[in-house]
Length: 563
Image (cartoon, rainbow, N blue to C red; front, side, top):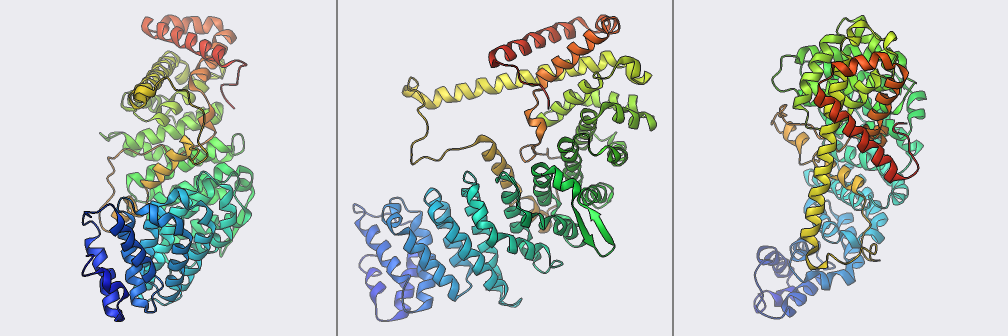
């Protein structure tokens, strides 16, 4: 390399300079026998070719740098000139739409992520401009189309790196929102870019504390895309839709959008999406489950404001539950029970009336209790505790007879599931402590003194959300489906991309508060109930009460168990 390739970087013949850059791509992993001087010299030679008079040489140099970046020790030479490198890539991208050049830029962003922040806004600006130029090149330019997709993927990489600095998203929005609206609002003309647009929309609706008015323009476009040409993208649409509902319930409930057949409320658009997905015979069970989480989002974020929608929620959910009652894999049933638990938590009196009007209360509750043995997910267990506990907020005299006869079973279920959740939480803390001990090694006595000035401050909730989004990335489930690999309906759903106000509800405190109030309100009735409970359940309940009291005492001034 040193004797035969290095000299060609400065050859007067453009082909040889281009070939030298090509050789770097093929032999970048070759070990060097010196102290690193040859590698540093090679990087300098490639950097010089980024501004070569010949465009083909520039392209090959930009591709070569992609491979050198990953070589150990390369960052020492590249970091000081990172701004100049980015500018050279932007210039090359403006001259030609080459997806490999943009892919090389993405490797730079991934590799130097913690150093990209000062350049994030410039990156998004340039990438947005490049995307517009590439998509304007025409349908026949495949290279430009691939480069456009790479631009969007780079933008999402930048957004992911900036999730701990959501205030920067506001500065990026003027460049990103038009792209998102363009992709979602042209009747499928930009179908190949939908996944990237939905990823970007998810970042912009989740991490900033508020959703900008301009971004709300994407809401009706999401529905129209789902309804007309992007039904298969529901899995990627659901996270931003949940974010819209959670971040501004007032706007969600009051806003309307104009369609050819007249104005429609945003909440009606959500209910249309759910019903069309759940009732469509071509929908997969994974899609049906994902759609049902939108019902939960409405119930959790719009407490006391959507009473008139409970009949629809029950109609769709119970129909789906009836179809799944004999299914050996209970995943869809468990999501249905999450929705019903959310409805009970929202308003137990109205929800019980809905179940009673259909004559299914005992049947539904019995199957629900039976399926608690198959519950592994946190959300299913939590909504079981909150939903069943909420029934006991009502006086026993006002409960339907079918429910009164099940009160001992309801309490047993609540106690057992709560105890299981508590045990799992304690086990999780123990595992974390064990891991911390292993990682600390000899440094276990050192106290944590905060983050260094050059160390990112991390947020566990944000990281979990990003991890969940990664599972729905362009290289994940949706891409597999579009390539012909059907959804695996037996795979468990992931709770990590769902959040709502119930995250702040402590199920142990809530259970204790509701049961204590019920015993105080109607002591004679609940003494009879207690007598009907297994002794083990009573003992477990007492232990949970003691744990709740200890938790409140250790926390200082009491905080409410629910909103």
